[in-house]
Image (tube, rainbow, N blue to C red):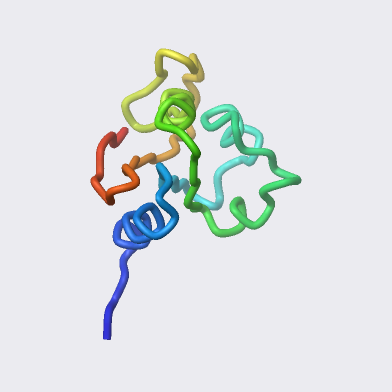
Length: 107
């Protein structure tokens, strides 16, 4: 038996897909429009299930694409270089390489 937590799912997805990845999470009771401000790559209609769950795993073809999304994600540490949102919602983000190595975390 193998038990996978959310971080282990991220590393496993990245290794198996050979892609860069990012795990995101937020309070599923947060206002969806503010979540979209804190993570502007999310769309309430297109990613409705993500808003219901409060988390998702994102896979990217390049490190640059992943870092762009990461830099647009406003977490507990406040506005980022690419996102000036300064509201009450925060979106946690954790990045991973195709080798399963964890990298950036915005907590």
